[in-house]
Length: 138
Image (cartoon, rainbow, N blue to C red; front, side, top):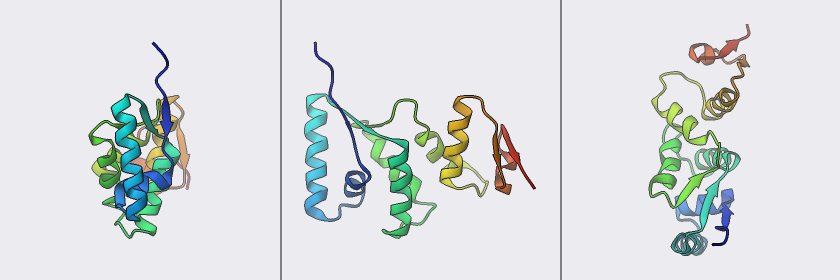
């Protein structure tokens, strides 16, 4: 049995899948994903691509910051596309949705990444005060 091909999806492909714009590229992205999934190939999205998609959704596509994490999470619902191995994007997306803190998505991602190797995050972000393993400088 051979190795399963792995395809890392770029921000541009992810945005086409999520927004459907432009239509011809969205269709090409959807077709690629469906064909790769049918072959049993792995489709992966890196943490960096998720962060870039988050910013593109709310700056270019005018998706409110509070809605962008939910839009991105839809990408992973059918499990055809998965987050990178060892990535923290899903943790951060869920944290920003469920958190009452005013900490942003990327700050949650940074905190989650540091937590994977038991580092304490040091920040000037006041909202980080309520996080475990975080020190806020004054």
